[in-house]
Image 1 (cartoon, rainbow, N blue to C red):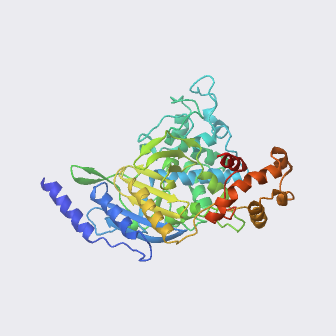
Image 2: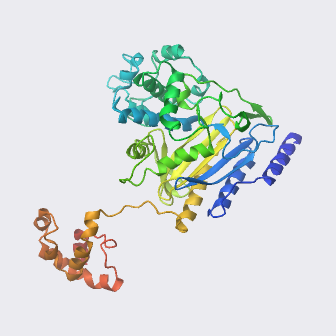
Image 3: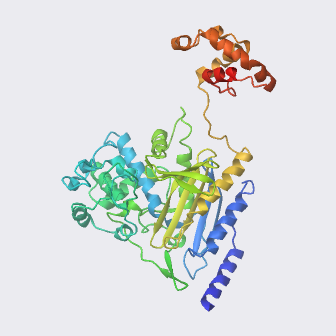
Length: 472
């Protein structure tokens, strides 16, 4: 009890000195602060840094605890943590860059780029060879391998080559169902290495940095801590008998593609902002190294997970390309990724509709703010949309439809669909004569006039539905 009591007193003292760098104009900032304070009280990590992104800008950030136990080093937006499996989004983005460059295709068999896999037995005689798309979407048939893979980051190239050349137990044929595989993403690292002509795994990691991180100005994002500011660097810990035990840091190697990146809240705000900015599709220039179309493709579900029942009802979860997706009726769709590593835990998530994202980085072993981050996203998204701080992501009518809207409205209210003959395709009159459509419409006009619903933007009733209404 003595140790536990002392630890609780330290927690209380730390929370009393929480000084988030907040924007008073951000609705929901106080809720975010309290959510992360609750996370810290749970004792999952000695320190946590967090930030809120709105429409591509880091508008609120804070930190609690310490980067290094025993030191007065409060985390902040520029503090550097290992982000573990959040790194997978950088690997996936690089594969799509190579696809966009015409070097490879997502439906290429992995063995085309990793010849050591050729001829290895598959799950069944009728199993297809896994493709790059299968690995990107956690659908390659390999069994879940946490945390075995996390301890192999520094594996040299020659040992990795020997490892992947051995027959592997597979959970199921490729393309059948989702199953999280770190090995699959290390194979994608080898794909990048061979497709880009890199001589080694460290050279492959440098290639990802040159193609993705440096063009975005993410100067605190790297695969090694060799050149990072040690004063801003978090050490990783594991809680043993109420004592935080430092965890060893592995150097880059053949397994780094599964989760070896270091980064900060400030840098990840740029990364998250790039995904938010992928919507809506538009004509304006794009200065991101990965095209908007490919960033949207990364956020599309490619492997569905079993339907879940949450506090707000059914939840649809899926794996995209190096990203995850969750959707509920109440909050809509939230995209991102979490990370867990010896000494670290993290999560980033964003709500495309409101353009709100939240990042949380912690230095406890597999002790990230996994539930905290999506709760913070939902809280801020609701406030931001209520305050009309952003233009929400909506589906707009095509310009050609908007131009003839007045003509359609006039024909609907007159009950004379002949006025529309010049803008309708040939099948419309053949499917149901325009005169009959007008007759059906006349039965509905009076209640529509009373309701003042005079716009095709509001009247989303099909002609078939109008016919059914008239029969009632």
